Length: 262
Image (cartoon, rainbow, N blue to C red; front, side, top):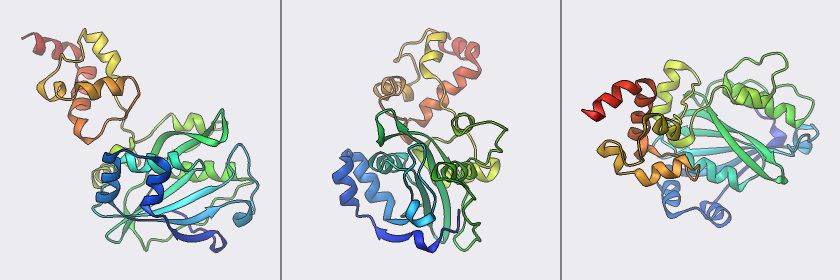
C-alpha cells in the first residue's frame, strides 16, 4: 500500500519452521501454511532507527511482511499465528499472479506490556496490480501516529474529529477466516467491507433453541458452535453455512420458528 523508505528494507525470508517453533500451531494450521503459503518475507521494519520516529503508546516497531500465496486464498489462522508470534503490528502484502492486496489487524499492547499484544479486527483492501503506484508513508510525529494512519488507510473510513483508533476499529472489519479471492469479490462490490458475525448465543436464547436444535448442516458442527459462543475459536469456512443459518434467524426469527415447528 505504501512506498516504504529504502533504509527500512530488510527482505529476509521467514522460514515456516521458525514460525512453527515459536507459535506451536496445531497440525491443521500447519497444513494451511503448507497448502496456502509459498513464501513469507520480512520486507520492512519501521522503527526509530529506520524512519526517525520515536516509539509511543507501546508501538516500538511496525513490521511489513510479504506473503506469496499459492492459490489466492489465505486462512485467517495463518495471519493470527503470525500476529500472535510477533508482538509488534504487522502489515501484510499478499501476492498472487501479479496481483497484490493489503491486510492488517488492529493490534494493541495488552495490560501486561509491549511483550504481548491483543489482535482485534482485520482490515483488507481489494486486489490491485503489483505495479500500481504507491503513496509515501503518512506524515506522523511518532510510531503510534504512523501506525494509526497506516491502519486507517486499510479501513477506508474517514476519521471523525476526536475519534481515536479504537473507536474507528469498532465500526467496520472483516473476519480473517477467508481472506482471498472470495473476499476480493466482496471488496470489489462494496469496498473494504464489514462481515459481522451474528451473536449465535443471543439468537439461540431468543428462539429457545438448544445447540442441537438446528438443521442437519448445523448439527454436524455443534461442537464448533459451542466453541464459537465461548470465544475459544473462530469459525472457519466449513462452518459458513452455520453462520448463514443463524443470520437468517436473526433477521427473520418468526418465520424460522414457524418453519422449525412445522
